[in-house]
Amino acid sequence: MKESQVVNELFEKWIEDAKTKLNEDNFFLKINEYLESTHPEICGKCAPCRDGVPRLEALLKEYKEGNATLKTLKEIEDIVNNLRSSRCSVGLDIGKNMEVVLENNYHLLYNPVKKY
Ligand code: SF4
Image 1: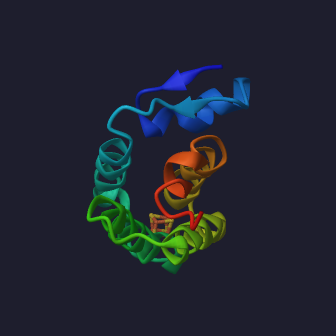
Image 2 (image 1 turned 45 degrees about the horizontal axis):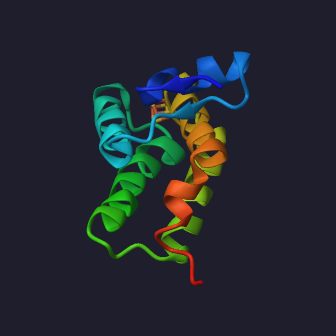
């Protein structure tokens, strides 16, 4: 299994090894830094990327503040799915990298909000 220290390499590594996951150290920080790094590329022409990325950041902040619930996680999943409808590779790439996070680091998002 390959581990990635950075979110923007996840999809490329996942193509070679479907078990690729994001290294767990500073998990939320790494995702936040990655999403923030995409801001200059986001042109605002389509909703999945323009609205989805800031919303993703807000939802991840709920984890940081200890306010995340199963609803938070469900919305994160919906937004990542919506990114498949982005108009160009900027949003598509964000979605693909975040899909690898959801697939292979899911427990880090699920454990803090599970009910039992
Ligand atoms: S996916 Fe592309 S077209 Fe859509 S807002 Fe992002 S950068 Fe603009």
